[in-house]
Image (tube, rainbow, N blue to C red):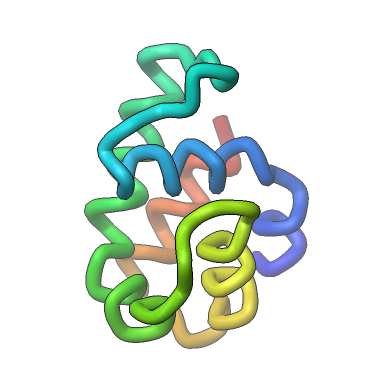
Length: 87
């Protein structure tokens, strides 16, 4: 699981964009990728509050926080992340 988190930084960038409610002008994501990012954001909402609440958005900090806490993430969050990594 941790290795998969390291392999897909674009998905974490999309996750961050979904959490922020906006997408970077430089990042063009397909509608499917946006939907997947929203799914992950919803499934991981509590985990993000629990483990990453004080983490500033940007520069991969939220992705790093999720990666650092991968073993502690809830089952729904892990499942959503795994589903996205398989696409």
